[in-house]
Image 1: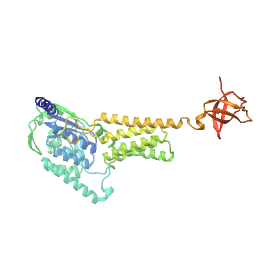
Image 2 (image 1 turned 90 degrees about the horizontal axis):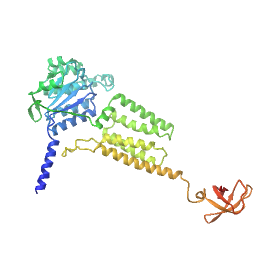
Image 3 (image 1 turned 180 degrees about the vertical axis):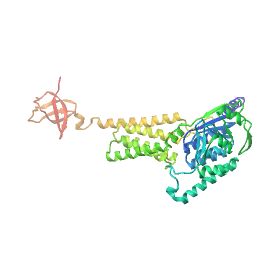
Image 4 (image 1 turned 30 degrees about the horizontal axis):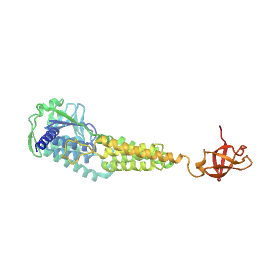
Length: 437
């Protein structure tokens, strides 16, 4: 019983250490707002909650992004029990378009001097105005919906609702000082140290009630994107997406025009799936499963096609990328977190073992196909035997080999009793030559 209590005590210490307060959790967004950003911010808020952080600080520098992703991030921030501070930083950074919604949704909104916020008018993904594609009615519908969205955020956080509407309707953009004057944000601070000193003691309203922010003596921990989020974020760039799509189409077309080249088809297939994921034609998890399935198909093809390892390499790349996109790993100390994942080292090892095994099998199969036969007439090639009847270029003779008499031809005169080597088989006649001693 004592041992049990002792181990229980140790377990509680480990768990409490894993969930101990990390004080201030800092997450940085310096790209467009996309599904990877949503995943990243959700994980940051989740970790901040589990570690009982004092606050979550989001360093923001974004030109904008997807409305759907912006809504998800705003929803997570506004439902966070840990105070969230959004800080447009460093100097020269901006909170453009989607950044306006994210900044205004924070419990505390802050900016660094030399930054700007605004220009939140909705546009198409290519940058065109909405009415050029769907007409004025569609533009009005989307604009009104976006205005209602920003208006609800401003009302919830008690910020300047009129300016927020202008930012959406007229693409108004202001500097940090003007934003503070217009009550769009709460604080202007030159750096993180000044920001933390300024917001110390401020009261904010979270989903669980009012909380006083305490930054005195707080330690800071940077929360980074995991590899899955980094890959997804990279592919979210429209330029990368377009390049992937072009590579995919070109690779597939080249394989169709020149069957058997293999390499363009493998690269094209992987690139096309990644392009579909980056354009959000298919969800990330579905794209990951397709990549893994493609890897399995390439492994099977390796057993039937002589590709000199190209299919195996393609399978390894496809399965590895698919596994990294599919699995989202969280801190293993969070034993009660239902979204735990697989360790990346396990992914690498599993991919290596599976692809390596089937590559070896494919190699052995190819080797067996090119290996000379050891049974039947072909299996006699290379063996030596004794001539039992004279052979000449104009006369078929006989040899005795493997317990049988065979007719034999040769390009030279060979007498009875001489030893010869079998060099070929043609129409059930052996082709022989004198054995060199």
